[in-house]
Length: 234
Ligand SMILES: [Zn+2]
Image 1 (cartoon, rainbow, N blue to C red):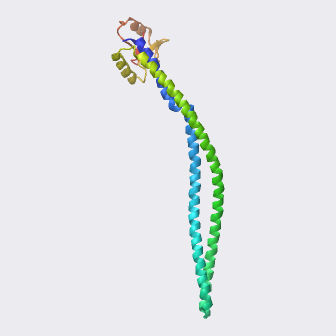
Image 2: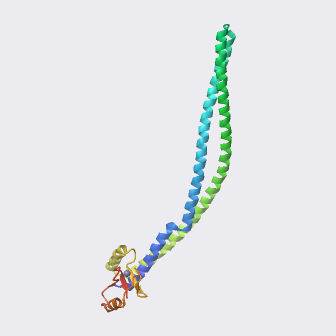
Image 3: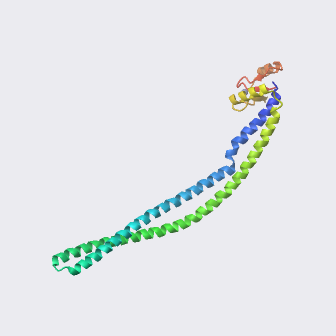
């Protein structure tokens, strides 16, 4: 097994793993996601106010309909009043009219409250709409920056994949298959080296006698780290 050639593949694979891991965590991606969240918050606030506005408008419609009904009743009672002679009946009618007038006043007050709330909400909507416009602009700009950064990252990844293919073409197919399997089982690193007396894969020390034993292995035999089992380039 040509471990030197495999180590070249491994170096590119490690860089590829890092680039693929970094892509969804690019600063531009995170910034765009934050801008999207900000925009969603403002839009949520606007939707809340508009919903309250709709509720108020519906209540106002009810208030106006009830007021119109009371006005009609009052006119009817006033006409009735002109035809009544008995004082007791007149008193009863008067009482009824007073009750209606009181209810009409309550409705007027409530109507006024609703109108005031509605105009306050209109102002809030106007202000928030400006905030929303700014947030939407910021989101669109962030989206452009994100797309550019992602395109850059994709181009770099494509370049690395081409290098990987070139490096892999120097390795026998059966060795590549074994390498891929070993890499998957070893957290992405199948081929390591001894650096400053340690395995570069697991960072465990490899004793002098272990290193000597590795050196004495026949050339065709693959050396493995005694701690993690990764293949060691000699
Ligand atoms: Zn190791």
